[in-house]
Length: 332
Image 1 (cartoon, rainbow, N blue to C red):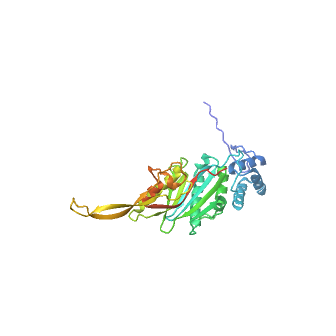
Image 2 (image 1 turned 30 degrees about the vertical axis):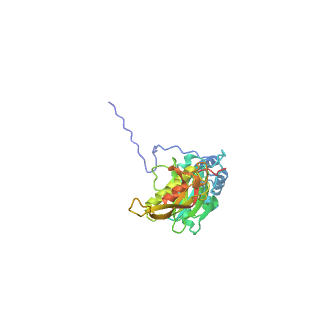
Image 3 (image 1 turned 90 degrees about the vertical axis):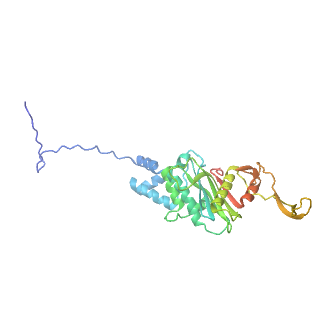
């Protein structure tokens, strides 16, 4: 059997060649390819991507940093959707203390984006920032989306406008802070709320309630014997009614207070007719009207035999004002 041995020797003067395998070099991409790659990665308009590439001599990494810098400075809060689809999807958030509540609606183009943690964080931040910013002792403050966008997020250097701008680039869809409102309870009163859960909110993200319908209400309780928990639950029940029945206004009370007389017998002799005449009040409520848009006239959702006015009297509650939001209801 013949055996062959091959010795590869590398000399000092490199007289022998060293054979090594190497990966083929990647072909450089054209400026047009860089433009499309940056557009697909960031989601910003082509004109902005082209400007960023030119400013950085077509360095992709530097161009992306440049885009983020410009987004922070100019606050690109909107991106034109090429399909022309309305931003009528999204979520509503409520943030509240005992006497103050903020309700905010944030919209996007699709349910897909509304399900993302990025979008839901924006909705949460918008509500909490609004609550912490407006502390004036006024009954109600209605806010436009542009006013909320300018608010600075507590604990961060960014405004909500900057957060939205960066999210648009990442999610590649229009995000709009639509509207918001601050509601304060009267002295000695409290804030009640109810949010109808949305299927878009994952159960793996507890700790903050987001939904597609929401109500906040300023209320007072006249029943001193009720516990704080009982009062809170009653307030929640009323807000749930407002979500379901969609009243436009509170409406005036129409209860009639009648004085009735009654003879109270004070004799032990059954054959005698002696007694004391006493008067007491009888409250007569009008029948509920299921077609009314006045809250007081509507049949109470959890007991349709009585009106909301009647239920409030029995519960010892008084409602002063309420705000009801439904996702997309005012998007044109």
